[in-house]
Image (cartoon, rainbow, N blue to C red; front, side, top):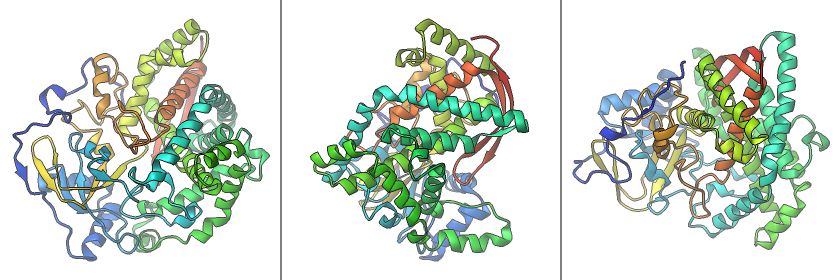
Length: 493
């Protein structure tokens, strides 16, 4: 995959803006259907996981209906989900309705048409599953904002420290084997960073030992298994579908691991839990929410994002690597270190991070229910959605909309430099637009800016150490894998 330079990588001029959709678009009935009860959702599930695959599933229906808005069923379906019927929005113009909490409800739809058992979160509906209309949503989100603000000064130095350990491990393994599977060492580093950030101690100094990331992975799997396929031989598809997509995995199988995570956080967050209690949140409910924020939102996000970032930058090639080296090393030298100010001046580095978030968003799906009858617009038509209908958005199609972005399937490192910054309003990855800010009243990820910051620091540390590298890319249950196949150490700083 190449990284292309482009002064205007957009088709925006020739398409309607989602900020002011044309009023003369024809109102059309939403195409597609759900099939027969029970059998329709099963058929779509089998197509989605086995017969077609995710992207082909959506692409064939776009072509069949000649529309990026249509009716379909989304997995898992019977018997995990009581209702699989959704209206799919697969373009950049219709997609943002999913963020408008004045028009849509976000109650219990965080992962899709089903909700994992609250036994996996201590018996509580955590903040991610609450609608902003619920009073506890604002309480919990303000607590998270307060925590992040208090830790602001630790973000860069702590993450750099964790990355130093990661690169030592990476080089040791590379010298032994000649290649390094990045995901494993990245997962361990990410969990250590998250735990040290929120709990102010190493997980190895607690009962978690070195197994924190493994425990978190198992807990994540039990919540997300209905959305996964293991890639088994076709003969085993029936058994996998029965195991993962038909009935929820029993929560008691992961209870021991979750309790160890919970107890480790609870024992290390006394001051934060004091703050939660003072704001009217029970200590144990606050802790379960913070475990979810740290383990699902933060660790789970880094687990997906960092390998994808490394993959796309690695595949982009040596020309982009040289440009990143020049920018990063020059600014770090001029600014006297890796600081917030220095990172803000790295326009190409910022663009590369946004491009990675655009081309492979760490969260692929968005769901919401219409609060009222409403009209959504695609590029060429308007569609009426009735109150109570489930709306679904597949983010990678919205952020690779060919009517918005030139070469949408290509990783273009310079895409968001200069005039390209105007396209950031079409980068959706955090349950909102990149140009928007999370608030207590919306559902945008409260750690959105932290994710972008850590991604930039990852690139800075990488290109302070190495001139270039090559990657072998792969696909995992959720996300991508990256294996370093060559590393060229920095010749000058």
